Image (cartoon, rainbow, N blue to C red):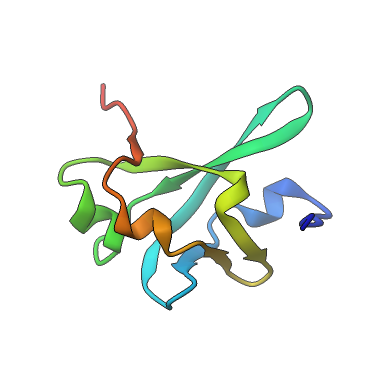
Amino acid sequence: MALKLKNVSSTYGLRVYTDSGAYFGDVDEAVVQDNRIVGWRIKAGNSSNLSKMIKGARGAIIQHSLVRAIDDIFIISNIVASQSNAEPEVQH
């Protein structure tokens, strides 16, 4: 299923939820490779599942293939929240 976006920058700051309804975080930026979106950097919110899963991390990168819908919010596959192998963002 192809997701259509008019403008990638319009997604920045959108809230991200799993398909089971849990708040995961907020869209920080798109990861682009060869003019295609391959992933999304999600920043952890204070009460997000992401901040609970990865203590001390500021965010994670999820694969674009795990995004189910994009509109006023992002909906991602619940499998992301059930796995702890999300790629943590390196803190400097």
